[in-house]
Image (tube, rainbow, N blue to C red; front, side, top):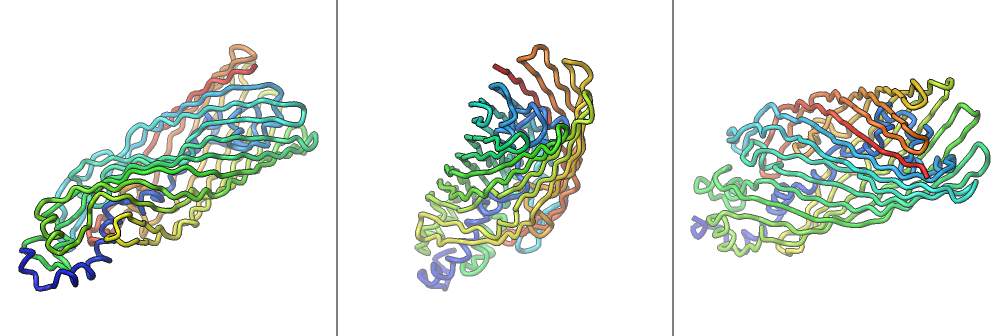
Length: 454
């Protein structure tokens, strides 16, 4: 029992601080969840999805350039309103198992389907001021993920529920420098929020040093629960350019700067009574509801687009994007409870690339067909992948349809199927719980948009 432990109370408190700080990191999951994997969302245009986003910042007639390349707004002659909605239906099923600090299998199932259907809306407004200037505004969701496992699955000490998203309010302006060149810029107000839960392996904490309370406590013998919720607002910016060397060719380039955030919220803990008795006896006011914060940044990225008009019916383009996920070196979590010291964990992500090619075929004045293919790499690898977002490289196959019943109104639909590589995992928590195996993932995306010209 706790009162029979030979370690003096103050000594136990001092020696426990580092171990418990790491345990809080594991319990909150904030370090891994906030930067878990490739949670960047391209889904803000049904029209662009139909051709795998090829030429997204250069192809004509898509009002989403307010976000995807503000310089392209200079070539619009009318004002527009556009609303997009995408349903991302993804499946993520774990195959494998987990062991505790003693090497024993962790009880529970494989978590079920951690995926689900996520709606991603976007809204755009574009207005030319004169022959040179145009302005635009948009609401979009550039980053986000959501996973949910059965509460008693084998990886519960790493993740149960994760919901992370960034919503951008973008305000853009473009200037037509000449008949062939334009520049654009955007101010971006980004709101980021998170809701993250996991189980806490208090049995493993009390069985190990400095408590050494085995066999009274053993790993898996005293599970608790942790949840963190929080949000933050921060301004960011982007700049773009378009160049039309000929009447048939358009090049587009966008640079989106990193947006540094400090997510602030509250950590909530459910602690078994037997565990709380130990903490009270050791005079450790830990694992109590407390404010917390974690600094991170949504990454910088560069998008290159090219579009070519072959004839009156057929046009096609390419897209090449780079995202600076390598900016995620580490994350430091700071707690309002002074008994829980700050903790830091390394990540060392890799930069990613997205390439696609696709095109439009104008079947008639009112009907346009689209198709495209793409490849999308992941910043994660075996040493860094975890259950929050078990991401892997993807291959895109897309189809789309545009219908224009009148000169002032257009409907677009896009469909994409993602072929996802198996995501192998070998992840260890600070309480020495290890989950090993792989994920079988797949996704289907369906988007629709309505555009009104006035």
